[in-house]
Length: 167
Image (cartoon, rainbow, N blue to C red; front, side, top):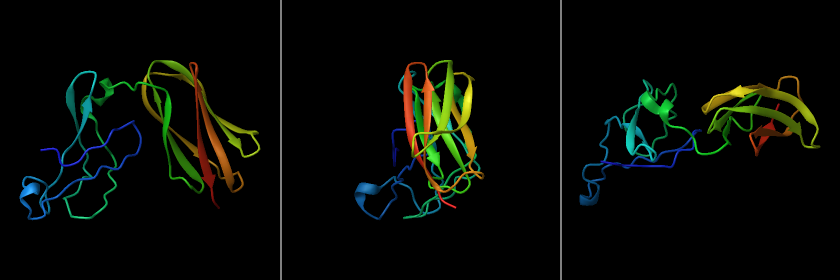
């Protein structure tokens, strides 16, 4: 039974999980201490792909769980539809942040960091990448607090995300 869903674009995502509350309408939903299973639906292959992690905890009503160390099984066969920076986390950050990005086909990728004045601060990536989901970490230890922008250029696409460095 599906007890929660969200459209996933490859980055961090919240997935609400519904629980049984004693009402007839919630029969079959998660009970206390059930361990929910997460899957990704692939539109291209019309299949549910298993997601596993040794950090998925038992269901507790109104709780928040951050799941890490996810194994995607055959998720490597799921190719994104567009170029995108899907998430920057943490944001605000001090002094490092992780930038997650999508590449729908093998491409040369540039990711540069600009300050609020539009001046180039550093180049994080200038390399060829295979299609799929990727991450890069920016260590801003040597930079001042402030607003920055991560700009990704790949193929004929350009995507920008705002970053806030707080020291």
